[in-house]
Image 1 (spheres, rainbow, N blue to C red):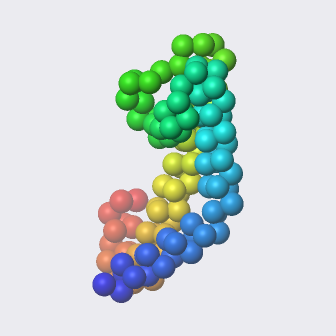
Image 2 (tube, rainbow, N blue to C red):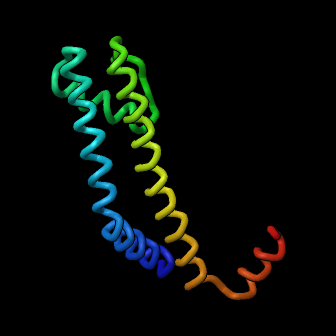
Length: 117
């Protein structure tokens, strides 16, 4: 249980530290999605939905851009989404590593290092 508490505290603290970057990426994704929404003449919510589906690289295909400028912006949204997701993954991996080092038995950690080296 101590490990989980440590992980959660570290995770949210690190997310707090990178929040400006995550907020900036989210803002760009939403803004670009709304530009595509206007170009494609979609409803506002559909543009928001589409931009986050594109940013997460899920891409259901139920809504898709038809115009060239929209397609170019969709690639940019996807790249921003990969960076956004990459930051979350990096924070999670780093937090897990720190929590394991803090709470892990040194003998177990050394054995794992030897085994996976």
